[in-house]
Image (tube, rainbow, N blue to C red; front, top):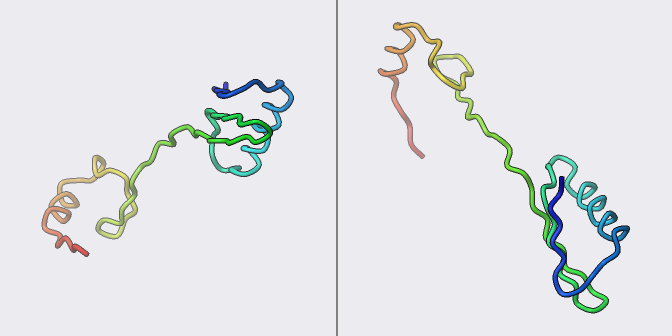
Length: 88
């Protein structure tokens, strides 16, 4: 379900549907969650809103690509603790 807010006028559903299709074409790798449509005479301003995508950080730790260290044994956890941290 896409939340559509029309301000400053009215639009036909076919035109709103066309803006939804256009948003999906412009941003194919994002999930469209809403559109704000500002009507000003013959001109229309569009603001697209997108759903949040969960992000999991993956790091290279002691030679392994990991998201968490909960499956590390005691030796790997100790190696991680003794590791030098570099800052930029």
